[in-house]
Amino acid sequence: METGLKGKRALVLGASKGLGFGIAQGLAEEGARVSLASRTMGGSKAAADKIGKDVLAFICDTGKVDQVDALVKDVTGALGGVDILVLNSGGPPPGKAQGVSSDQWRQSFEAMFVNLVRIADQLLPGMIERKFGRIISVISSGVIQPIPNLAISNAIRPALVGWGKTLASEVASSGVTVNAIAPGRIATDRLKQLDAANAERTGRSVEDVAKAARAGIPAGRYGEIEEFAAAAVFLASEKASFMTGSILRVDGGQISSTT
Ligand SMILES: NC(=O)c1ccc[n+]([C@@H]2O[C@H](COP(=O)([O-])OP(=O)(O)OC[C@H]3O[C@@H](n4cnc5c(N)ncnc54)[C@H](OP(=O)(O)O)[C@@H]3O)[C@@H](O)[C@H]2O)c1
Image 1 (tube, rainbow, N blue to C red):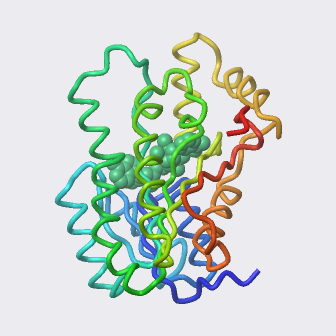
Image 2 (image 1 turned 180 degrees about the vertical axis):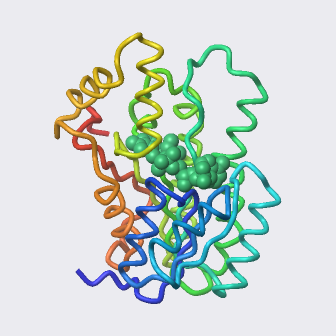
């Protein structure tokens, strides 16, 4: 498939490892000019070097508004604009819905919603002017089927979906698409941490927790980062031009609902 991504300028957040890294790598393999960010320059640089010599590394903690604004300025300065924006960040701490402090809610909402939208808002005018843009949010299967003990994720990620769906209609006639990808369980460090936390909480071994989780996935296994990234590469491509306002599931059949 000809993706039309050669020369397109991409910015991927939360990309020193895991899903963000996989997406950055997938876009670079298709010839996009990729810039990536994470909370440390060392992490970003190592990831960029691993992908290829033309990949640009930046620092950006999505919880810090000054870093968010500096990122937009620096990436725009380096690339002249951004055609593909991947909104991704670290997952919030696991925990119940009860007893989350107001400070934790605010902090998570800033990092997982407010500042991501802030980046998109600054890059959108250029996309609209050029009549091409792709905004892709990495969300979670929890927006469709809330995941026990992940209350902050279950509560905040739907905001990104509601925003994206509304924005998709506003910019559809300008060649800008806005979509989200919902990972089920993809084998990353985050998943290892969640399995370990579940094991600790329930008094089981990590292997037992992982075995039970895999048993709940029709595919019988966790997904690979490359399998997730392939969906993002498609959404970023010119071929996905009539797909907007959607949530694409990459979950091995795990989410048991039709809507
Ligand atoms: N893997 C799954 O199965 C799965 C399922 C559902 C949802 N998700 C969600 O998808 C997102 C990515 O998950 P993942 O599995 O790739 O996680 P991961 O392996 O832990 O990687 C997270 C990435 O985000 C960066 N990061 C963490 N906190 C950040 C922050 N505040 N600002 C900017 N970058 C930050 C990390 O780099 P630094 O630490 O160097 O900053 C790293 O590059 C998370 O929000 C996660 O909750 C994942």
